[in-house]
Structure formats: C-alpha cells, structure tokens
Amino acid sequence: MEKKELLYEGKGKRLFKTDDENLLVSEFKDDLTAFNAQKRGNEEGKGALNCKISTQLFHLLEKTGIKTHLVKTLDDSSQLIKKVQIIPLEVVVRNIATGSLTKRLGIEDGKKLPFALVEFYYKDDDLNDPLVNDEHCLMMDLVKSETDLEELKRLGREINSTLKGFFEKRGLNLVDFKVEFGIDKEGNILLADEISPDSCRFWDAETNEKLDKDRFRQGLGDVKVAYEEILRRILEK
Ligand code: UDP
Image 1 (cartoon, rainbow, N blue to C red):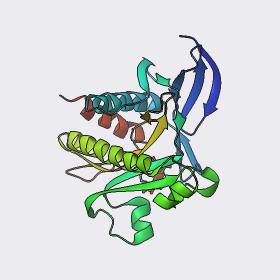
Image 2: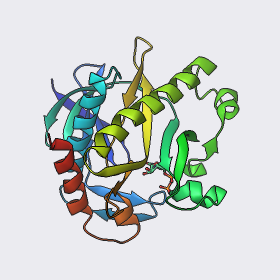
Image 3: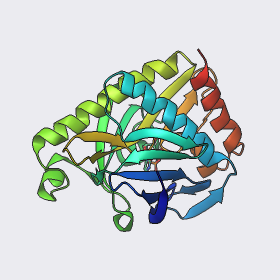
Image 4: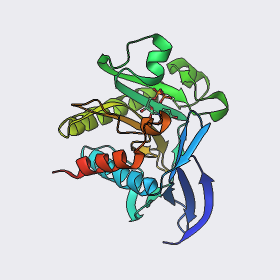
C-alpha cells in the first residue's frame, strides 16, 4: 500500500489517498483546538496517543459487533482506514451534564442524567455546528431516511454502554462523547473518525479530575500527562 497525496486536512487529522481508491491513511496531528479553533495549541506526541487510544477503543467496539472504518494501524500516529462518505452529523451521547448542555438548558454541572442522552449536531464550522433535531436532519437530507437516524441513535447508545462500562472498571466516568459515522461503498454505516480524549470527556471517578481536552480548553495544564493516563488505564487488564 502506497501513501499518496493529501486529500483533506481537518483540526485533528490529515487524510491521504493511497493506491487503493477504497482506502485512506489517517494521520493524527499534535494540534489542539478549542471553541471552533479560536484557541490553538500543540502537544508533541498527542497525535500518537490519540491514535493508540482510538485504535484500542475501535477494536473493543468491533468485538461487540460495531462496524468501523479501521483496517489496521500503520505506525504510532497513523491508521489505514476504509474510505467512507461522512454523514455530516456529530452524534453526541451524554451521561453527565456539562459543557453546552448545561449552558443551553441550565442543568446543574455534574448532574447525572436519568438516561443516556443522544443529540445530533450539524457539522458546519461556519454555523458553529448547531444542534439539530430529527426533522432538521431529514429536511436538510443529512441522512437518507428516518431508519438511518434511528440506527445512528442505536449505535450511539450501544457504543456508550460498552465504553461506559469499560471505563467504570478503570476508575473513569465517561461524561460524554462525540462520534461520527460514514457510509461505505456497500452502503453500510461504519463508525468513523476517532474516539479519544479530544472527543470524549473523562472524569476520574474518585477525584472528578478532568483527563481530556478540557484540560487544554480550561488552561489546566498537563494535557499530555492526562492523555497518557487514559491510555494506561485502557491497557490495564
Ligand atoms: N465534541 C467534539 N467535537 C466538537 C464538539 C463536541 O468532540 O466539535 C465532544 C466534546 O469533547 C464532548 C461532547 O462532544 O465530549 C459534548 O460537547 P459539548 O456539546 O458539551 O460542547 P463543548 O462544551 O465541548 O463545546
């Protein structure tokens, strides 16, 4: 497999074409951004940590029957992935209220939610990724059908229940996370993008210490130390 020209560069990753039109190389970057890239930073080694964390979590989810775009890891910070058409929705699942949910609805920060809440955000930087409901998604043709929307919710909940239990055993509360899905050439919905401390909130179960991107966004420092701690706990038997 030969890595070819750059296809796309996002906030957290670069995608390269390969000599196989159905496969891409995804390279995880060291850049950190917050609040729609208004605040930027860089942590050497962060890309490699996210690549390792995301690979482990995708393998865990594959074992539970979730189909993903991951083919294999190539080196510390890159993966070979299936080319998919990304559904332009961020699927957010929440167990504990914080972030935009508390700001929007005035729910107390840290409140445990009565059930896993699934939300959709329209992926559009110029619009600041607005919250959308099912009818917005259908009206704007962001998904093919109501069945696909239901499938995205089901997948979000299933991913949550696997990851929440996995992290509970490792002394971490999975507060919330964002996932993205894509459609492959056979029309399957595959889990795509990444699952990492850039896209999840992890709070230590004993101390409530934040071990994710909020350390960068809130200027708490030790970003890489926190990401290393997440990887260490994932690798615990
Ligand atoms: N999230 C993300 N990318 C985004 C927006 C949110 O990965 O562009 C993740 C975020 O890390 C958190 C969850 O989605 O785990 C919910 O984020 P929220 O809506 O609370 O927004 P925030 O307060 O992070 O801006």
